Structure formats: C-alpha cells, structure tokens
Amino acid sequence: MNSPVKLDHIGVAIKDLERGRAAYERLGFKLTPRSIHRGSPTPGAPVVPFGSGNHCAMVHEGYLEVVSLIDPTIFSNIKRARGPRHTHRVRAPARARRGVRAAEQ
Image 1: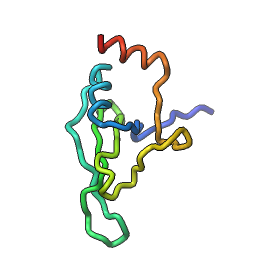
Image 2: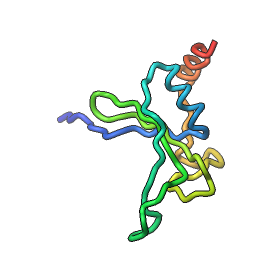
Image 3: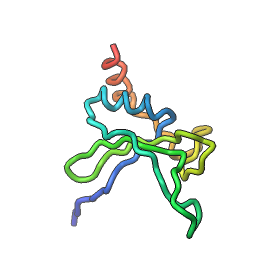
Image 4: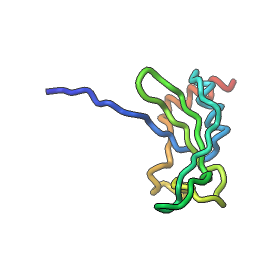
C-alpha cells in the first residue's frame, strides 16, 4: 500500500542568508521577509532572540525554509558548518547550480 508522505517543511541550511535569499528569488521563489528565530535556550528560561534566521517560500501545503546562522555570538540551535561531516551543509545538485548561474548572467 502506498501512502503519500506529508511534510511540514523542508529546510535548506546555508552559510549566508542574504545570498541564499537572492539565489532562491532568482529561481522564482517568492520569499517572506527575514525572520529572526526566538526561543528559550534552556527549559524555563525567558524567550530571547537567537542568532539564526530564515526566509520562507510558502507553498500549497507546507513551506521551504532558507535558514542560516546570522550572529554566531548569540545562542542558536543552528551551528556553523565546518566541513562535509556536518549534515546541515547543503549543496544543490549540479543541474540546479547551473540554473542559478544561468539566471545570474
């Protein structure tokens, strides 16, 4: 029996949020304004701004989240990528990279 997979959202973690926003807009996505994440760094602590933020592309069901560390001096549950062993470091397929390069020209 095949059942459809339902996703709330897909996150794309990138190094530079502004460059990521520009790249996804060149691909045709309409993104929300920048949002700064907020939360409680420890259970029971007050809610504070985190050092991460995002832009989202809302679709029929769910959304695509372009997310990045914005200020590494502030607490965040997103960590800076330091190499290929980090799972949040995302590289687009070659076909998509060619499309972005073509859109830049």
